[in-house]
Length: 217
Image (cartoon, rainbow, N blue to C red; front, side):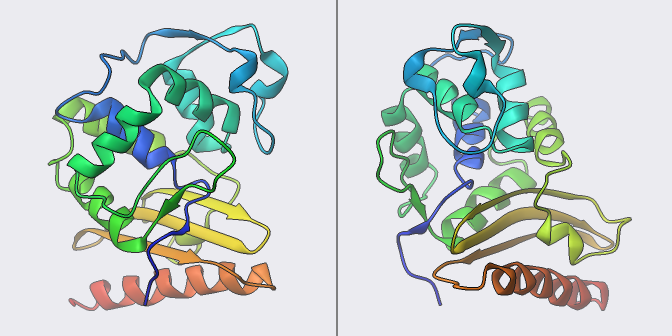
């Protein structure tokens, strides 16, 4: 069961990618465009751009940092360029009715169903064109520090995913390139006093789903 409004920490990047690469691009943003990092972009947490305010970065490089190491400053800079209202409007257009990005201190929200819908659109080529789809999948296949879905499948299986965490939150959402085709797995855990149990739950779900499809399910 899921509750609308589950914490979306670090599951914001797929929404941002969708806004940039959608078949109806949002905000006229180009991936080779250069952003100047402003003080308003600074964000705590993971990342390397916090100490580079005032410098410039391409949107492609910012995306790579946002996905690969959950660089929150990179995410803020990209969303500033697109416009938070445009990101949220694109979420609604895609049918992500319980997903919302906030630029202030309110927690971003989503549901497993919304993330599964977004990743299904990407996996089946209905979100973006061929080139943009390939770029998005490449970004999501980067090695990430927290890789719970990949831990649940054999190392020969590629996974395009985005993980995220807070003190009592562990999330991972991705597309698995299984032996019989692509499938989507989304696991969002919250209110877990023992975070490792959340991590293990994600791994176990990934393992069980892979076994199901590997057996011809």
